[in-house]
Image (tube, rainbow, N blue to C red; front, side, top):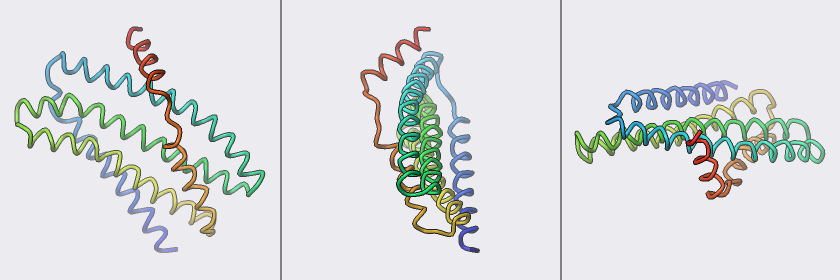
Length: 183
């Protein structure tokens, strides 16, 4: 039990580190107005993409939840939803960091060269990886803490990985992003 609490705490520490890294990226200079505008459009397109993808994934999650409850048990279905939700949150947080890092990376390259640009780009991209790992550790720890059943963790793992299985077509996402950008 002590190790379970420890692992949840380490996952939370990882989430806090990812958030600190995100804030550090945001503190960097954004660049010219044109760079800010392009970064804003990229961010908007990414958020439209995620919204559309998550709408489809939520339908999938509900269907799989009922299948798991019917054929396995309620806890597996619940942990599936929890795992998928953690994965979606990691995707959202990571996409926020990556898109806002774009203009800052460009500006760092202009002012400080490739070394400075690489630091910002790496930090912006690392937010997703750190968040995925940290939410995974927190999620598995919470599931084990409350169920004491290692086999229930399979539902969490299936939910966390299922989000990556369902991409929306690029063409549809681009069309939606352009539509929203014009509004």
